[in-house]
Length: 415
Image 1 (cartoon, rainbow, N blue to C red):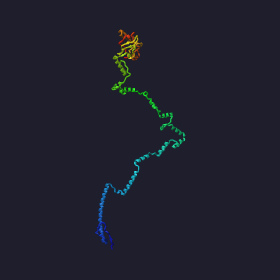
Image 2: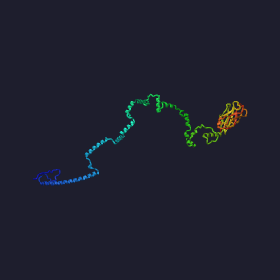
Image 3: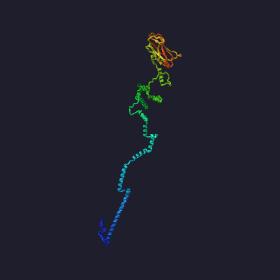
Image 4: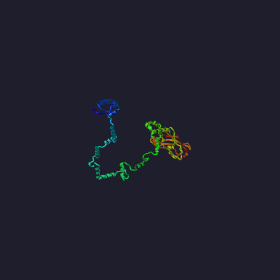
């Protein structure tokens, strides 16, 4: 007898087995059910194949897209891994923030490199100790040695006490100590500089006075002669007008002779003036070049240098009687002395000139012109005496005005 089997065909899927429900009671019913199930299963497999094909196509597209975007889906972490990794990264970031940066590490390395090592420290200690004996190679040993040597302490105290202090101004030093201190530092005693300054005067330093400074302002300046001094050409004096303001105090009248190449500028000027003077007649009062005695009054006597000759003219009166050899004039100016020469160097008669009385008659009288020594140059002309004296007698105030017509006394010693 067949066993009954109950199959529930009331699932979600529609009944494709001919609506067969109920109990399967025999083989025929089972076969019907199996056939129906086989048909349904075939249809389901067909649907699965179609779905698999569609999925395969989509997978191929996704793979192509993944390759295009360089996605490596197989190596990607899931969400849990990403969260874990994120936490680890945050912890690492916080740890890095607490670390020293590269610059600080470099400075730290530099500090480490510059630190003295033990060998260097030992060498410096050895240098400091030097050749000190074992018993005196520490500060403690030195301090103990000094403490035990009272004479050394006294000597140090004495040395310290004898120093010149700069932190106070109340040291009671003796004059010798002060002098020694100034000598040692090259200082001067207080007030020395002021005393030296007070001794500086215009005369002591050779400074010019105000009057000298005023003269210097108007004197010839270096800029006035610099061009000619540098070039040596008188043409460089063009525009240097200051040179014409200079007073040539060494000027002296020269001789009436030709200018030579050996003459200085001053000598040239003197000769030129002498030549000019020789070309003109300049009469001067006799009293300006000679000494005239007091008994000669109302004098109009004049002398002149004309063409190398000494001339005289004019008139005079007498206030008293004059005798023979009374002087009329004694010449003092060398420019108005005549040439005189005698072999025996004795006095020489130079000339005898006529004079005329006008009170009673035109009776002629004479004057003698004589030199007491030779006169051949300017030096002799300056020192030798020459006289114009009366060679007549009994002339007095009663003779009225006595006149001398223009006449040559002699040849000038200085032309």
